[in-house]
Image 1 (cartoon, helix red, strand yellow):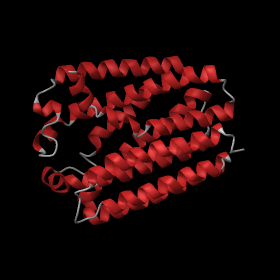
Image 2 (cartoon, helix red, strand yellow):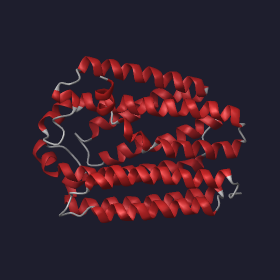
Image 3 (cartoon, helix red, strand yellow):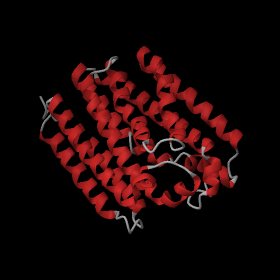
Length: 289
């Protein structure tokens, strides 16, 4: 049961947004001079909040999309359409993870608790968007993009507008790689009347939009670097992300989607982890201000 549940929510994909949230937390600590004993406590609750919120969102997505997934050859063997997990179990798991998220938010600070219901609403609304807008990829991106801002609030107790550059970067990064992933369902989306940028502009056109999003992501990271006055290691992290994204786009072509999984799963995992490593090193070694 545990294995099936973790497969349902794609638990391993938590690595996508979590390193960006942890980076934001470290940036907030540098601004507020939060002592490490307090910071360790906050980091633990941030991780729990991130994992539980994502688990709730993924479970909700699987429940809402189960009838669509059953029709798609690529997704028909997912746990709910295949019957290996039941809808009542999934709803119960959703309720549990939502409660855990709210509790973690309460342990961080009052503002986090006040914003927690809004955060849950944002991460869940994506599940409906492909039914009516081709911009569903940006909605998914924003659902992940709020994580760095939330982590900053968790540490600082307030929002600094500068961290919104990281929200923009994660939003654009996620939207870009979600477009690549959605190319696999180009024909299915057309048959079922679902919306996506590949369906609207064709696979080739959508891949160009994905590239533009990722260029804009690099620009957002640069603006964050400048606004916070960080050092050369953080700049190296931006360069590493740019190289990885270039490699990602070389893996996928309009007439060859055979390496989408490598582009989506492997490369993007490295993007977030390497970004965190470089920026954490910059902050730890005092190479910034």
